[in-house]
Amino acid sequence: MAKAKRGAGRPPLPVKEASRETIVNMKGSPEYAAWLEGLHRKTHISKVQIVRLALQEWSAKNGHSAPPEI
Image (cartoon, rainbow, N blue to C red; front, side, top):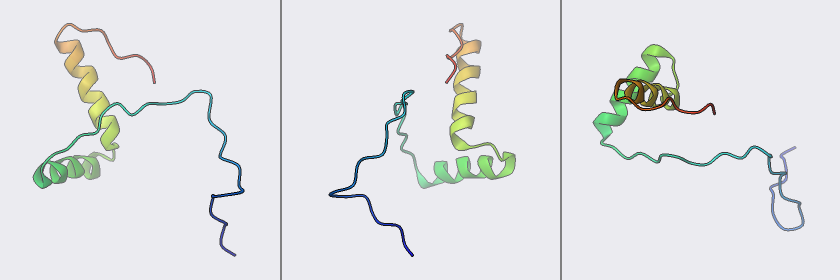
């Protein structure tokens, strides 16, 4: 039996205390997307983690503080 969809008459899902915010919504060419997908498939590192690692490395190399824990 299929699950009933959320809608009128059903309570909303509970909100987690530690909410997260969208930080980056990145657009790029199909070639750029394919390049990032290739990195992901070769390394098995998520695309988000690849970006986080790049930001961490860039900030360290350019004299900025390390990013906070997530």
